[in-house]
Length: 82
Image 1 (cartoon, rainbow, N blue to C red):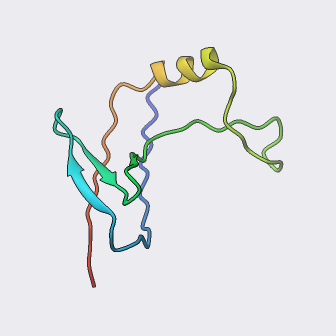
Image 2: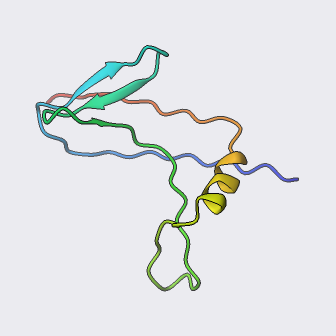
């Protein structure tokens, strides 16, 4: 089997009332003002043609098969104020 390294870096402008919080397991997530929490991570998208619309899968088995290939995931959040 081959190894595929995927690095995802997002830079977003977010509302001032979003906060970073640490979970009981030591990870970080975003606390939103409406009582929701947001974690940005991998979500596989699929298409039958690379020039067409990409969508997630409704098939849990396919999603689980892809996610089972992930050996580690690292998400680093940094809140920067201007």
